[in-house]
Length: 306
Image (tube, rainbow, N blue to C red; front, side):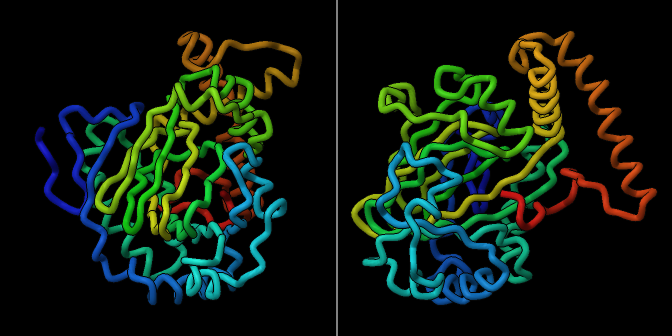
């Protein structure tokens, strides 16, 4: 397979932005991913409220949005990171691109990937970085996210379960519409039987996976502590997809039952034209009022939106 020589190895000839696929990487020895700088980053991000953490009692079916409240981790970010082996905690450093030092890491990886991605999925924007430091046997509950995602294992081992973004048995059209409209995951419900439908990755350092936007996923950590980093972004296609989901949710509120996104190209085209115009007018009005538009076309992801 033709591999891209760099930080992340991808089989570019077969790369499909809407297909789950394995990747490899060389970030294990990156100086910014060693324990001391990560602890310093955790201290900085905690002051900005850019961390998310929960205890090891969380399981696959724990509602993702509610996990920090249902199973709180009382330690500070620094204490958790320094004692991660026995902390019984899951910790995520959010939007690390907001930190001037770690923005260089996000740019280093995504700038390298961008030319290959642009050939099949142009318009990379809203770039972000997320670092997960987790105790043994902790779980990332079942959920999905809006961004395309390269998830890369740096330390330790874990099992990643990913489901196709078009699998409506695992995540209904309504669940996706609602998520894009208001960032709620309450219609996404875990069932143990889903494991049989998953693409399963047993990740070790140097291994990773690519997950398209709104691919449901769940992670189970191994016997030791783990460090994992995700690099995320939107494209023209993900922005269009998100707008169509939001439009469908609006139609549902009016009592209509639209087909799922992608099932009627004619309806999708009409909704994109109509709702895209409304969104453009709304942004124009905000500019006129001296307020910045709420744009997902920004170069970097906005802090606080996760």
